[in-house]
Length: 126
Image (cartoon, rainbow, N blue to C red):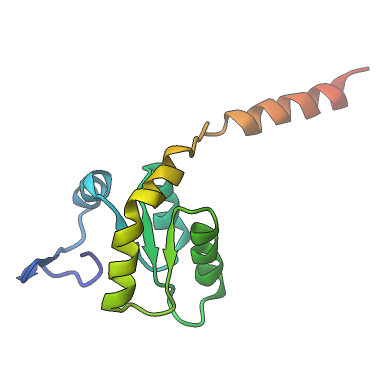
């Protein structure tokens, strides 16, 4: 668990101080991700095909919207608050979320560049 800037063990929960390299390794090796609704982490999790349990920060519309799309796309679940029952429900459905994420493909900026080239060719063509 990141976010408390501590290095402590509490039962099966390990609080970790910030480490960009450590975070990337943990994210890449994780079975799933529990996070708020921030765009960056949710995007990284989708890119890495990690199911997402999203609990948006209260009164942050963007986070609610991001979390709702995660659920709509079948990549995870959205919960208005973090509860043991919600986490259990999410974990039960991880295989289904993984199946949806397996269908996700990303071509980087290639699609954007192809479309820009088409538009530029139309504008520049005599």
